[in-house]
Length: 406
Ligand code: AMP
Image (cartoon, protein in one colour):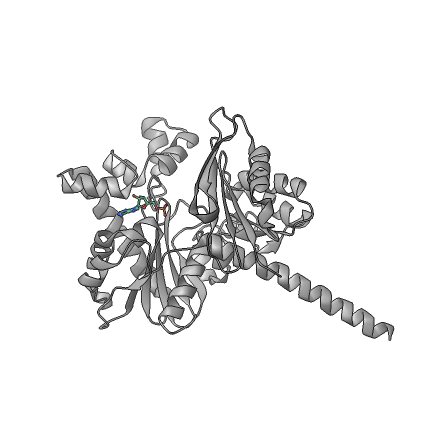
């Protein structure tokens, strides 16, 4: 099969898309945003790197997908890969069938902001392109190898057995891609113990042993774990009763505060954007400085905690907008982990060009790498592998049938 895959990531009012070709060159990608409003538009990069900006007033998800596919149809995508945040207990990428769609729907209470939007996109592409194979690739799937002592909460057992309350983890496609790519570059493909730090507007850490996730910082929802752009990460769970009793806040208000008004934004009272905070801190803004310090300290603490899942540490991979681009944040985070034997090369750390992969340690301790993530590439790869394995299975069945007829 020639492997041109359309990767789709549907949010509540936006759709990210990318056409990933077999050799992953000249990627076409873009974002349909403000869907459902007069300002709906598509912005992106088209063939040959040319910029695209297209107004699609009042377009909904289906109309936007139709427009995107019309523009891409001459590239003849062979399959569609959907990013789906929560797969519940699904452990791998799956061909979209009515049964799998039902299981995605059943996982909605665990990802109320994400899964309904994915289902809108899935529904539209299934109706628009019934002939194309479509695959769901789950953020949670990579972490299904975690042992029970990593994924269970210390809560009453029935909440787990009857209501699926457990740690799932997210950013799985990124942790999987980065650890596979990084460990290959380090000469130990999928072997040994690695820590990954995916640091973007959403951030998480992961411990990977012999290519499998053994622990991760996010939990039942993508709120648990390290400090993020607007998400608090770990807080004392009693914060809910404290705010309800003392400030009269309801659950909706507390949830919104923890998800949308906390993290770097909440700490700094300025911005969720790390670049803005670094600039402000350089100009003497103390709130920006403490936001950066809390971010790095808690990140280091998370990496140290996850190291308990690894028999040994071969190295650490940084990725995501912050992890890939900020030498300052990488250095500050590692300054809190001197007892792990990391030796950062200041020169290599500072000189690494934006968007490139490279090793940034001196060679005296565990390796440290920057690996730009490629979630779309990974989703395309998993989509192709699901479709190809189905084609193989069908060929085996056909040849079994033919031999039985002889
Ligand atoms: P992502 O969600 O992966 O796109 O990452 C977005 C985050 O990366 C934002 O907080 C940006 O400020 C941050 N970022 C991008 N470039 C830089 C940079 N050069 N230095 C620090 N942070 C950066």
